Length: 131
Image (cartoon, rainbow, N blue to C red; front, side, top):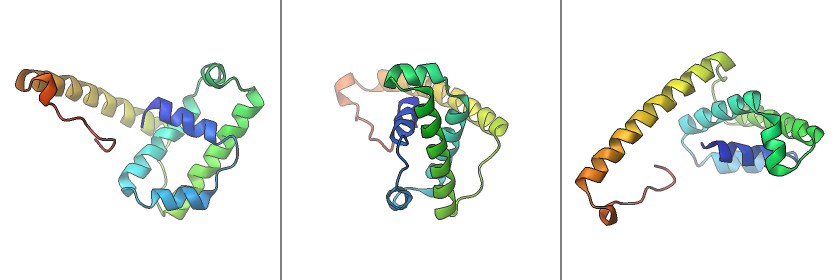
């Protein structure tokens, strides 16, 4: 999940989301991806630069705090409703995601070099949202 996606989720949590609708939508997704993205969102919430968020959305500190609180309640509710394993602690998550992102960056660079060498630009297939 991209930072922009997490920021948008947080903005949508300005009002308390309907847990039942969120859970109904997420039941269609692979559980491992849901858990991974929820952990990523938890890290984002704890490391968020308030000035950045407020600058993009023009919100007050009180609105941001309410959004963060609503988002954390949503994460706990989704985890419980979908019977997902408890999340890792923040230190574990930061290490896991940093290592994974470094690996993805290296793999992405290598993969793009191979693609550019093997196929002309017009022959490459676009990637879908599911990668």
